[in-house]
Image 1 (spheres, one colour):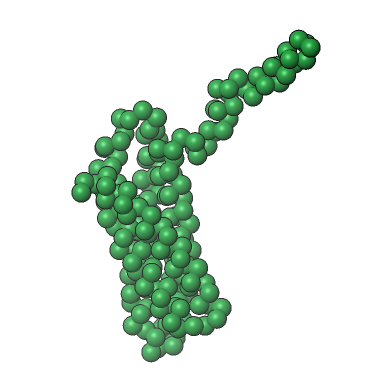
Image 2 (cartoon, rainbow, N blue to C red; image 1 turned 90 degrees about the horizontal axis):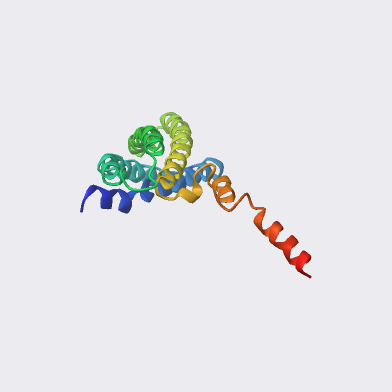
Length: 172
């Protein structure tokens, strides 16, 4: 497997697991369920572990696609910058979640970890979503900002159909 294949195969894992772990942790906050909290911690830990190879395979992926038509270097750079922050935040959250798995005996420490991990999970979840969005824009030009406007302009400003309707009425 090359870096492009690794990046594409694993890229969604930390995004999905970080968001699922966040939702579970929020639910665990309200219903005060230890099993749900532990499960959320495990998901965040796995998300943190999965984010590392995804991030480090990104450079090879960039080299493989940067010369392809329609690929924007600026979008790749924004994706890379946000991805670095996302990887650091989810890896840190994963490490704290691992530590927190051993603190359930000490109520005060467990509460502090739970609050800290929740805040990190919110941050990393948002960064993961932004990273995924920017990554999608690299090859999916239809989701880039202004893509709708470009499509309308390429179609003649969207007024062609109005002109055709007018011609049809004149021919009647």
